[in-house]
Image (tube, rainbow, N blue to C red; front, side, top):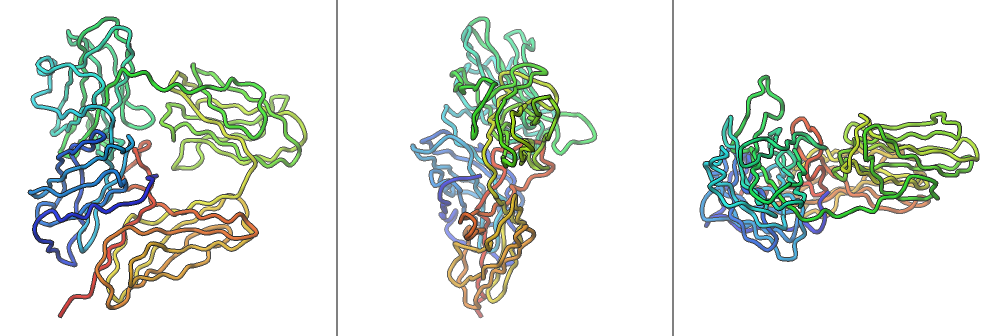
Length: 486
């Protein structure tokens, strides 16, 4: 989920802003390069249908990333502040009539390098200077395209290669292999927690290595040929900086509540934690692994002191591979909490965070889409699905906030057990044109704990196969169209 205040990078790309109120939404499909280094100004180009015919403004979810228009259609500049934080954010194009889908870009901390063609072969890459602690930006532009980059390696310094292609929303299933200076494959990577590959390798000697990238289709095609297009955009980060080390908790007896970091370090391993509970104790137990980009596909199991399985969990739901469960102790005694991998895999990359705490009712709210369009004198429905976990005694209300002048929406009651809720946004006949994000909040009341939950929408993507860098956002877009002047 994106953080911070939303900002509008509202500079007009050209000298005039002329659009039709009935124009189609901007066909924003990709951006290259899809990010830049902290403190830099990056020239970038967008791809998509109809973008050369209209004038667009740009919104960014991160106030430290401001997107300015260039002097030509499809040309933009990313202005990334010196105090920006590495990580992803969203941008979208918009005009007076509508808004594009949000797209993911990424702020990096290393030097950024754009690919230079030709770079298909090892011979091509040998002509370039070897790099380290760098992010390569590239596009697999056509079917069969392969990109190759030279790496400067030092003996004994472990190198990490992280490719973000699918995770940016590119329609690709990428693969990566590492070659020595003779062109012999010494390491390879394909899928991880999503379709993007990762390689870790420790060189036995100083010298040059070469990393090679290619991609298959996503969604999958009938053939297995290498694919490419202007939208097959990727970012490859290569670093030999030491990874941050997470302090791991040793499996054993724990005192509740507890938050523990663990690792399934080898195949078929399970971590067992023992805890005491009294009859009727109501606990919320969850594992975070996929959400922290771990390779672990976690399972969770509770046993009594005899080894009898009392409850188990795998995926929390169809949208999450991390398990969570609510469990009530059937009697006083000691119990075992066991974490494992669904496929009995294990490595230093199979990390997890285990949380055990008293159960507290909670809720989530999901919007039906990412953007809404409202014409003067008319109304539009905003649908959301509220899911509750636990029992609520007080009233729950849904409300739209951050609406522009001339647009109103009455709050509505949410059923105690959740369900579909509809808010109606209404515009006055004289409302001014406006294009900006708004928010939908779910508010609980006494005797429950009073809290406000902001509704989110799922980042649109075809046939997800693991997480994108951003999966949800709390800034739905509202386009208000003014009445035409006579």
